[in-house]
Length: 213
Ligand code: URA
Image 1 (cartoon, rainbow, N blue to C red):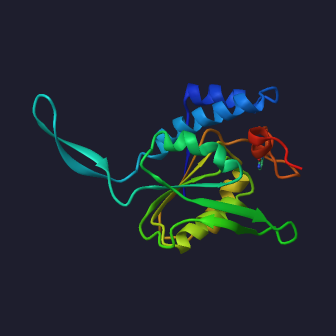
Image 2 (cartoon, rainbow, N blue to C red):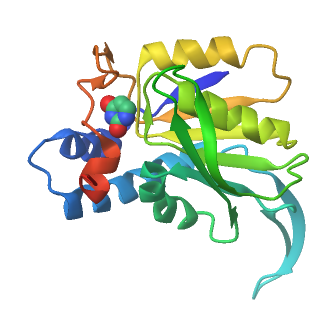
């Protein structure tokens, strides 16, 4: 697994505002959206392209276009939805699939409660959207799910990551024979006893969409 922490003043600026507990949901949603677009720029560095012949007003030229099959963007419900628009702004022709993951509080294992994805992902490039890489359980299970369907290349985009979650992902994905990259705006200090990222930004789903009782 390859982890990329984006070092850019605009990313740091937007992330700081996201972290601030006084940033209300409408601003939080807008900033998350903008931040994802910045992360997506870096996360799509390996997106597959193919050569295309075009004619400019001046001459013939060879350029590139995104190769088929189209990239697949997979937000993990619910908080990953807050990252979708920011991602497809850069990849408007991507297909979008959905994955709902839930953690069993007794076994601590993440499982799938909803999915809308192609049955066959053979060779597909997948971009998984999950704002908080905390324990790594959910993201690990999501990546396994996509790999079991045949995904050939996975990039996870996370607003924030914790070292514990990255270490667990590394362990759990050890032996996978496809490339997995995690792109994040920051690697924070640690997890607290409740599994929150410190200093973090709190509960990403609640801050995007409010507390649902
Ligand atoms: N999920 C969140 O929304 N926030 C955290 O800090 C950890 C997991």
